[in-house]
Image 1: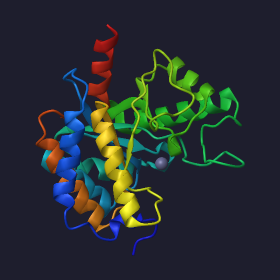
Image 2: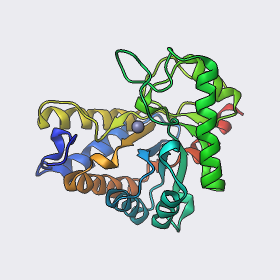
Image 3: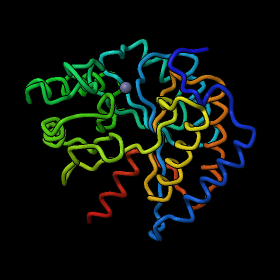
Image 4: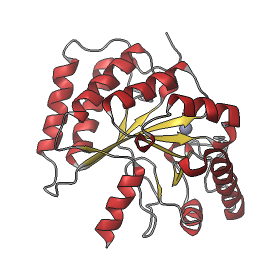
Length: 269
Ligand SMILES: [Zn+2]
């Protein structure tokens, strides 16, 4: 058994396809009547090429569903980037490569982990945001899109201000994150967690996961968080089921951050 694999991924329930179809359909039925319900997928901790990464991108490619890739700048090197890019050569429009912090280290002395937390000065935070951005711009070139996913989905008010000052298109954390993002910095939050769930039993994990998914779809803004390093064969099987159902669901548009930003701007205009 892999380390850090949630209890739900020990074995898929026998009725998993039916249950997922029902969950997605029920979420769609309850969506607001604006006709622009969207779903995005965000994969975190990207930088090191490996078989799980290849398998992940193949799945999204196969179902033509876009994927937002949160890249840890300090972990990325040119050879690594070239190897990642080889896995995603075609269908560039499917991938949204963006920034996942700087070094993915914890600076909090207690409590929840944070790289961009309140203990640090605005100068230090700005320095790290800029270092990360510069590195990704150098390595990724045109493939980089300026959205910031803070490690552990957490950052403080000063960081949000830095991102706004530097003209980031958006920040991506988890639903209900505090402090809220302000005008001028849209928030594309994840509200479904596939691979870092902590429930003790698989039954509780599945119930909560399906509740999350249905509510997120019903809200019209569903963001699914992926941690590919923690995925085992069952987790890949479920992701494939979910992608197949999502791709076939007319009421749900799979997007990535670039399209999301365009929608937001239209909303504001
Ligand atoms: Zn992370």
